[in-house]
Length: 475
Image (cartoon, rainbow, N blue to C red; front, side, top):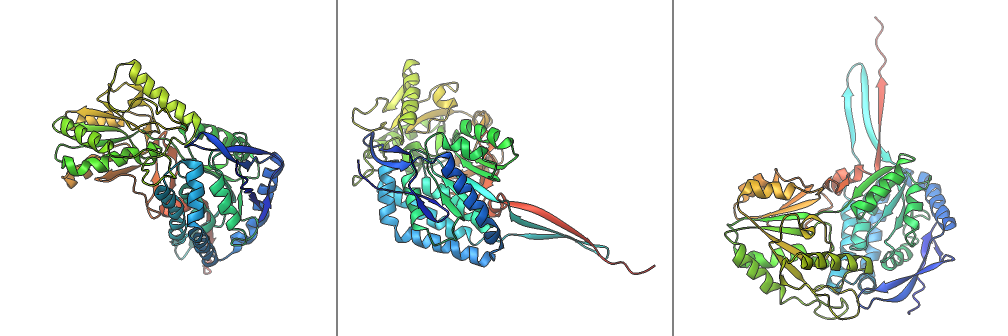
């Protein structure tokens, strides 16, 4: 096991912690490093540091806070090769994808700095002046999942810091190292205590969300865990933003160019080994093109290299952790037990690590677990549909409502279909594109609140309205 000696950052200082836990490489299934396991004492110190730093950071002019975000992005980009290699090792994703995650985080910080904090005058009459201003909420707990550790951290850090909050950043227990390393690199870029980076085993999340010194929780992860976060936050009425699971449908209309669209449809489902909340999880294909498109997607799938993300040419890496690996295999086994037809894949790879081969199912029933549940892995059901009303009903028949996509050469019609889908983001002829300047959030059990855009900045703000009655002339 390598001795990386990566530390937490609390009040601008290195904190090794008195306890540690193992970090695995999912390509081998073996531990290669240890990370600090934050204790309650460490957590109290991080919260105290964030609270102490809050008044001065809140009072810092927004122009200076913008400069700080620029400086953070610059440090990350200067260290892109080192950070990307480390991310591949702990997360499993191929090197180009790891560079996209780290570089995307820097980009999001830069673009987040361009937002303004609005001020709204609702009345300016002879009698009264009324203005609503937006200030920081306070200490923010930013809790990030293991699928995109860096860019999803930036989704939270950019708006939270711009708005004048201080932050305690907690990466997932299975991918703590790259985030901790960024915390080390950013020491001195921000005033001490403004950004604290801690890591811990499964015990840390509940401690953090329940801590009385935390004012807001921004969480990205599963719906199941999101409900626990919300329950924990309820005791002190903490503000919450929850970006949760999805079972995202794609609707492929009969007017697409089958050969051209097959590759895009494949990656809409299988990028990052399918471990994306907004990946296509069920693909509805019109009956008129079902057979040729099915064949084209499977043919393309056979050309894609699955393997260790550190190896040249790898396009899809392993499942990130053993718990998710077991869950994906369980869904595959359920499909086998029910005699659903496999077009490709279906058997676990007999190699070390958490590898699941690309697996595509041929028109399983709508009530199949692989259709109804979020697989979060490289397994995709292809589903046949006949008419538009039917497929919109099937697409909407889910407890989730995060993303959806429509694939058609008739843009006007696709835009019309989009308005009938119960999803926070709908893509037409693409998938998974997000922007720092557009709101992203979920319907139903896919979340509460939004990230991105000015709306995302306001998630980290508290509104205050000041009414001023003007002096009135004597009667």
